[in-house]
Structures are given as C-alpha cells and as structure tokens.
Length: 207
Image (cartoon, rainbow, N blue to C red):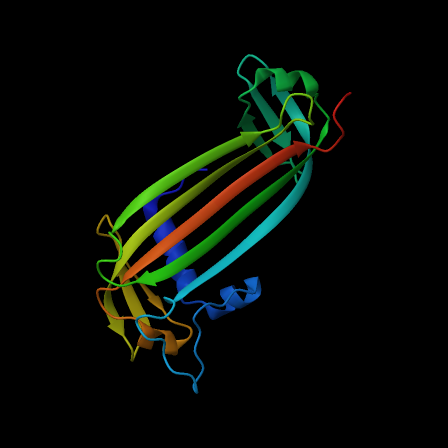
C-alpha cells in the first residue's frame, strides 16, 4: 500500500478544486455563493474531503504457512497476497473459503495560513486483526499527509500552482473560480490521502 509523495500531490491537487468530487461524497466545506461574503481569517479555513469504499467478494486461492501468507482471488481472477501476523489464524483458513474485502480511500485538504503549519510529509500506518476464536480478519491502513505551498495563482486561467516539500510543483485548474478568491500565494495546503483494506472470511468462526 505504498505510494509516492508525487502521486499523492497529483491526486489530491486534482480533487482540491473539484466541486463535483466533493458533491458526490456529500461533503462541501467553506463554500461560498455569489451572495455570500468570503470568510474572514478568523472563520473556519477552506477545506474539502471526498472518499469512496468498494466491497469485493472472492475466495482463498492459497495458504502458505511457512511464509505466513494467504492469497486471495477476486471475481475477475485477480489475486492478492497478504501477510498474516498471527500464524495460528492460518489454521482456520482453507483454500476455497469465501472472503469479503473492503477497500477504502479518502482525500481531504485544508488551507492554512503561513506559520500555521510546516511544509513536509508524514506517513502513518496501522494494522488490526481479529482476536483468538473470532472469524479470521484483518485490516491495514495508511495515511499520508503532505503540506505544500501555493506558489502561484492565475485567476484568468483559473489555475493554482502548488509546490511540494520535495520541490515538485503541480498546476491544476479550479473548476470553481470563486475558490481562488479565498487563497493567496504563500498559503499552505495540508493534504491527507488515506487508504485502508479490510479482509475477513465470509463465514462464522468455529466454536
């Protein structure tokens, strides 16, 4: 579930100014209409989030107790091999067992004024697993937060340029030009990109 800072910046930059992405997720933050006043500096910062979840059912294609891995096969024949931290759970898994997997991802961003944050990148990973006696299940997640700097705003072209902590830049077009009135060169964009994968046997645990 690894990903590069550049990829995160590109994905998040596209979603930052996408009104349709936020609307699809039912999340719209700090939006203004033509009759509303732009928020003052003391009001809630401009931000937005969008996310999705996909559930897939498949089967166990292979169990490797020596390497502590299990290979899952999806409905279209694709396979995914996962590490299993607790080898005892492999005793409850057999080839052909049904499994259900849920993949989730979300992107959120917030505009911050200079001094309120520091450009950089942080990565957090987490793992959870079922308790002994429960149906074998586990989840792994990763959250990457990138704080970038707005280096240019072109209101005629409706674009904004963002510089990442490694010096890479991305220029994206604002689908809602009014958003450009709410930011300035030097403002910081804190972008969080989250991924999570949860997998469980699709059958009750043995008693």
